Image 1 (cartoon, one colour):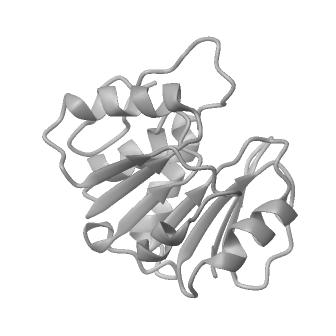
Image 2 (image 1 turned 90 degrees about the vertical axis):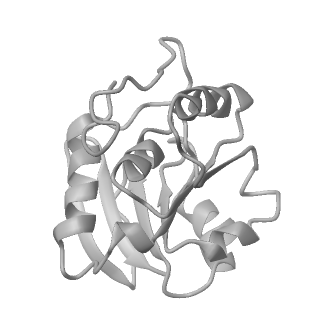
Length: 175
């Protein structure tokens, strides 16, 4: 897997062959950032954004945000081996505008999310939307842009944009 665009375009992102995560496909990552940068309804200037990749896995979404000029990126994953790989990638850059955390967002304090303007949520498949809503979304400030990747169709009140793929859906909404 490689970075699609920006200052790290073409750099390889470390992916374990036997992992318990599913990396976001290149075409989906490209769509996410094209929508963020060019959709007037989302109204995003990435240079002014603190971006959180909440269930980071490979970190590909957060790395893409860094590569495209995000003000700061917060990577979080409960698995230390995942965040170690993200750290390994970033060590080979000049980046200082990032933070890597190992927090269980369902059980630990998540106040750091309130400093973000965009939160990307791509939880493991067995995490229901109700769990995410009750344990995460209900605890963050209003007007934060959430990008939720989910395999199910979900009804949302503040939906701005929905993008459907074969086996997944992207929901862009504000809390």
